[in-house]
Image (cartoon, rainbow, N blue to C red; front, side, top):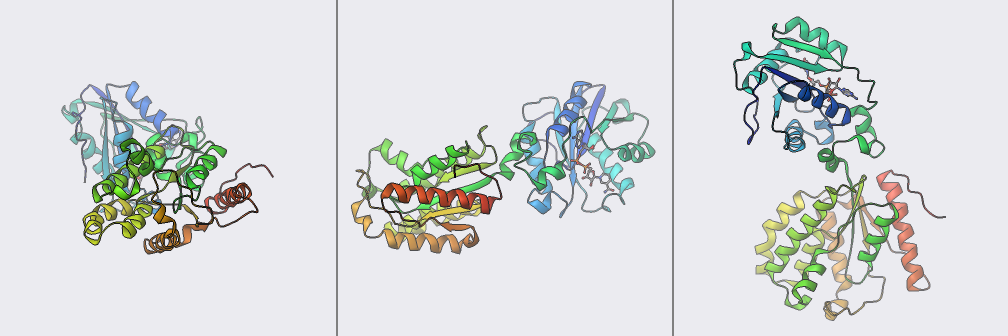
Length: 376
Ligand SMILES: NC(=O)c1ccc[n+]([C@@H]2O[C@H](COP(=O)([O-])OP(=O)(O)OC[C@H]3O[C@@H](n4cnc5c(N)ncnc54)[C@H](O)[C@@H]3O)[C@@H](O)[C@H]2O)c1
């Protein structure tokens, strides 16, 4: 099954460059191959190929997702189209060369404006075997150009094995898939926003801020005044804020979030009416279904409650209820194994804070399997 691009015209020109691959993920080696095929010809077609359960699918990068990411990656190249080749109905590589080549040719024909036989094509590959097998099966107007894949020492396999180590080589759009997502959660006044900032800056990672706080400050309203509509804004606003950090150019593999929709849901559950909660259920479900976390750092209410003018001081008494509710929701949504409690208490508030910071750094190393340089 071939799916064509939505907003782009079919390719025109005398000679069109072709590349194909699994692209799980797209990296700088592929990118240079693709650009070479574009710059040496009138236009270029990139074909993302694969099947259910292929090596991309195994890590959550299904063929459809790769096709979508590739279109986004090249949305600013007018003369470049991306097509998808679904191999589900043909023998898997290397058993299906005959059928696969027919699919490839059909995909090319579907993506060009002119007559296939009257157009020349060059397929760029970096595997000698691809050249040998294709040349046995291609018509005369389709050439194969073998490239040296050793010039750019990277492979998608290496990236899948250790994305953070090869971060700079991963295409920007595909990086979001490999981003380690850390959320810091907890009831009000636990110092979580400060911890998010300090943890993130300790490794120069991007971090989101608590959207509800910014929203209340801007609107100049307090917790007591919040309605279901305000909560709806929190869900969308926080989700957007977190996503922006994942897509940020400063994302170097780890991103920190100050709260998410589950944190907001625990608040809504405690402080909004049953009817208001029902109104928000669908929005919560849609948002939470898209959330994935690699680590959830939860600060229990071990600190003193601070009146900052926005907080409802009655909430002080319910901080423990809130904490229980939050933990319950994280478990309900299947994140139990991602939770680490930051529960250290020092002799002084400052000492307690530093101990919890150290706990968090330790958790990053253990759960994300990344090495963090830190002061001993
Ligand atoms: N069913 C079949 O029999 C059959 C036959 C042929 C091809 N296929 C399909 O075609 C696809 C082949 O793609 P792939 O697995 O090679 O994809 P890939 O994403 O690993 O590589 C895509 C292309 O980029 C090249 N490349 C990779 N790293 C490079 C680097 N660092 N520098 C320069 N070039 C580099 C590769 O050699 C390849 O030509 C697969 O989806 C496969 O299933 C299937």
